[in-house]
Length: 278
Image (cartoon, rainbow, N blue to C red; front, top):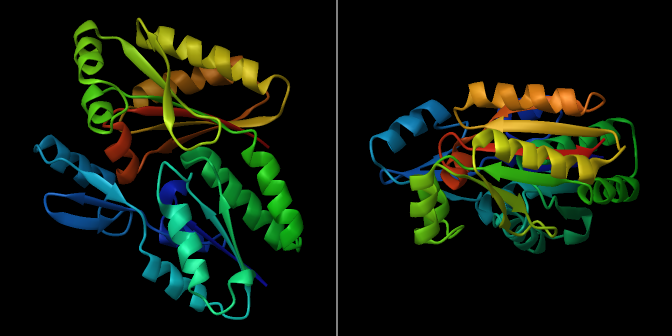
């Protein structure tokens, strides 16, 4: 039997993961001196309230001990772990280290999704479907790698201070961007390890137009899932999703609420636009 494990970069809670079935290990956030497992011990609304109260958050991956314990729960099964992008999080490296601490590491397969959020969730959904269909681990791994190579992710932050704290742009750029009301666009680098500057729109609409143009160039005629994920920016996300549906009538279009860990990285009101081939 193949057991599936992932983390809450999928925007799944532990309970939601059970329906796949997939064991979800929550990412953690620390704020006001306390550490919480997202979805399980704090929700995004409460988290946002603490941010508005002036507290600065940080995030971290599940512990190695938690993963070792989870691996040991299935001593006789093959285990497939699909982690959040290595470089954007330590979840992949932690899972690899935990694998080496098991008695039979060869039965555990750790996949670096090279992505997060919408495409990561799709990869986990796909793996769960392939497992239910009785596919062998080799075929599942090959299918996942083929899909991973097609993903593309953009981030539109609304608060420059989060980018500044995370080293995503210089203090001068942050100050100028906030002053001029420009809209920065970040794109995930090809190997998935970091976010790079894609461009700066003179307005939010101009930024969206630029992103959709790049998406169209990337997607071409492929059948894709395009996800729009947001941190308390539903009105803007709705408008973007409408534009996506108009521009990509054959795409599967979905919307998600971002979790605490991603609010920590991208800031309140940030929006992610992502695609992956179906």
